Image 1 (cartoon, one colour):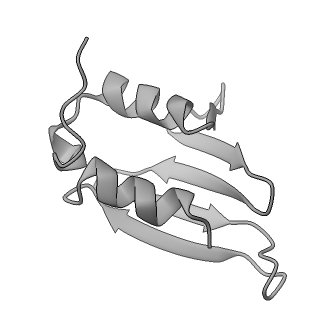
Image 2 (spheres, rainbow, N blue to C red):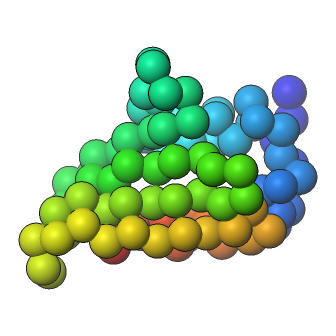
Length: 90
């Protein structure tokens, strides 16, 4: 299966492609809540939730404030834009 180009809005990606993209970024799917994902990087970690009309990212206990930061991204953004926004960290 060939993934749509990186400048394609995420709403034009089939769900299996979105899941593969998240795995390639280092995310791990919650076995009980399949729409929920988790990622841990060296300086941050986040929970990612695939909602009906958006991706909700909760950066956990951020270094700057020690509090969680939540961001919401619409599926109308391209995969490349989402990748840069989500995986660059809080």
